[in-house]
Length: 367
Image (cartoon, rainbow, N blue to C red; front, side):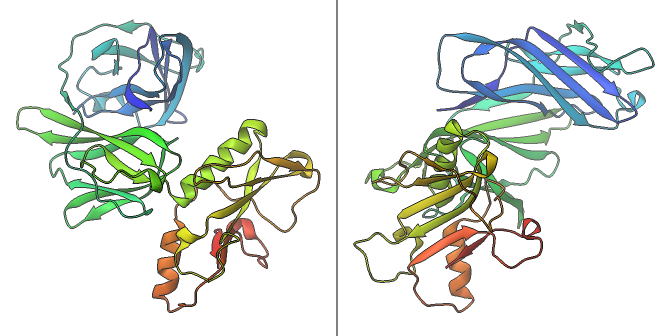
């Protein structure tokens, strides 16, 4: 399971390039092994600059590894516009929950982007609350994207954080006064979604963070009696394919997905209009030196056989930017609503043939 949270830091620095309007924040230190997804996340500080250094950790171990992280942020940084600690940025870390003031080094004729300024300590009021395992789950649909929605904070804002190795965001917006986010699952396991709402309480800004536990599983393992928390989400078609892509890239790191063929099992002959019946999958990936990697699904959902290499190119295909957003069940819904009601035996996810520049087109579900 990946746990999201603040990351400790022994050294922090901030450098601003006024010509490119780029603020570069960097951090060094030690973290638990298997910590990934580092990011400097902007926090609300009216009249000032404030970021939190965050990441994901899992599985948990006692071993520490060194890290060095740098992030470039596009921002118009005019000092006179910031009345709270002008010339500094506040960075919140796991070992400094109230925030550390870091002087911003402005690039000049004798400066370089690798230069680092020494941080300065100063107390600051921490406004964030943490609440664990909310009992209000998102709406769930069978193999369709997980949906979370919350009331709009009219005086502040709403943000969401998640582990991109487990979930991919496919949509977000405002629906009749409620902010919503939609996710597809990428692999099985346990993860978390954090939703932060910021409010103006009159004399100060405050924010509240709610953490949702999310469990992504293969459908047959669903227990009969489930509680509303943690959230349970079936492994989707895209999540199943993502397992295959990850498995291939462990052996062939530069492989790119070309197409996925989904078929009915050999012992099922009638055609279907339910994409969940297409349980026999094969993924084709392009490898270096014009070679091809093929991987077939295993005996149960979420498992795959060992990939094998073919020293020949797979012609007339275009690499699919992975992951994509649309699930196969959504494609079937659109097809049925458009009046194409005939059952099908198989489906191929790929770029359609015949375009002069197929790389500019979106991949399609072809039934």
